[in-house]
Length: 437
Image (cartoon, rainbow, N blue to C red):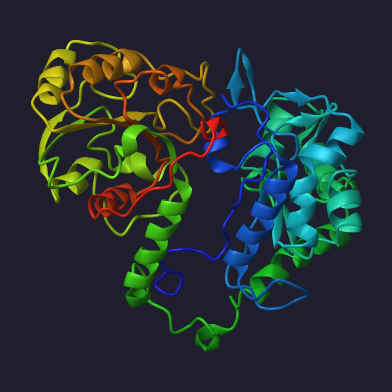
């Protein structure tokens, strides 16, 4: 895509923040609350993106970036947003919890970049704290790359946090703290005045510039058409091998939470008509979550199931907010006349997203009522499929004997292909203990 002029080679990913509250809107981006797990995920993710360029000044396929450094896990909660949040964290908690994945990114993954966050840590903006940036990332962990601000972070610490009196002071303290690159216009506008007033030196700016240009050189951006990846083009995108790998990732990423009486896999011989119900039943964009690329194609759950059985479709409610129950009667009728029912429920980016924290772990609106009413009406097995990035409390469904199976599907474009494999009678692993719930 870069060779075609349709993409860059710098990816500000992965998000390796520790998940401290399951209602955080961005928990769909990061693997969990365990520092060791997140650290190992971070290392594998970085190495996968960067290819062979994992050490020294070796060649990079693309440049990864571990974000958001550090103690960042709040977007908008009860009147406090990420631009004004001051994380009060002990040095031990920084060392043992929040910084563990970032250290692994740099030391083990040799990541090309680290992004500092909007919030303050113990009263100092992360992008203006030399202890966090210069002394830790650069001096202790030996980052071979650049440190970048989250977008407009420098402007935020001046305009919203009022951390400095003058804008050139904000430019100076961030560069001196170890910031190399500003995502946003603030440094481009105010750094010259900081130099003219002696608040930052050209030598310090040159050092920051060298850190960014070195990564560009390792990416081969000055090599012309002679790089090792110069022959790649559109024919190498969405290949059968790529799509098969995506399918494998979807299989391994989904979780079977309940399967009473081996209700799954469904069989096209026994279940000739399937009622497909729910606000996510015909979803497309919802399936890829946030920060996703352009998919090769979309096949909704409804379309996927329709390839193997006759379908009767009802949304039940329009949108995952499910603000009313006016359409529940039609959904009940559909379930009553089908051999099996698949309820595709859950969340989307209107409920959980960057800058949007959740207020509850329960399903939104009337979703729980829709599930219970359809389960009671259904004449065949009922399969509840959950699309979400964050956790959902579905204790009611686990305890409902009318719901035969529960499958957490996350945000996976390959969901419909998993249904295809189910119909081919490939068995799914059943939970071995209550821990599986």
